[in-house]
Length: 306
Image (cartoon, rainbow, N blue to C red):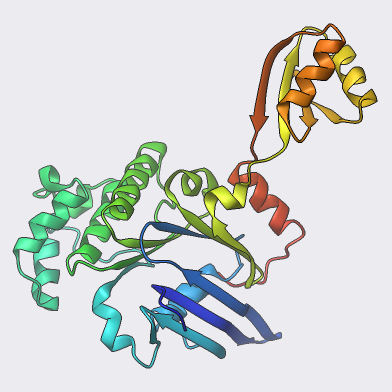
């Protein structure tokens, strides 16, 4: 196993059900580099949560190898668990206690200095609401408090499973900014999420799985590619399209403009200029993460895992 914060090789998890065996994770090779935010994506039932639970020792793999910080888990999990923070399930806090009281009790239980409570609350921007009772918190604030709880022990790796589930747009924005700041501070973050636009904004690299199998893993820029499709806006798109098609380009319509596949933008301008057609707009079109995701997972059937 190499020096990565998370690595799995041939990871497999099979559940026994009344209908027989169900494969939730199937020979998964996962490599998460140190530093930054790594997105962990897949359709519902693709095995994301099952994989996370195995990494944290909450479920036992059927086959394969796992490592955190190069240490094999679950065998050596006690050696590295203090370097890992995770928000996998709904946090359990006392509703009638304040945020500070809840974290103080937790800090005492895990042997962390009380000063870490205020530091963690400040990191998640709850220091000014620390005296409010937990039951008065919004969903977004409750999720930030859950993350603050994991930060008490100053983890090197933070694993977040769908941290924006059920949040309104404001709550999503707050969690997005928090995750980005944690990644920038040097904490390695594994972010499992189905909100692809959020992942694209905060992640430096991403792994996409389907039916428990690896589909693609790369840095965001490599995942999206530079693209060779251009948006072309002209006064007469029909005429321009005919000239470009005659010149050998693949041309389609898109939202009142043309989509033209070309190796270089200058090839488009040359054909249109020689035809007496002047451009109003010529810009490269890069696929977004949602487009790549849908292409990779097209035809996936739900395996029933999480």
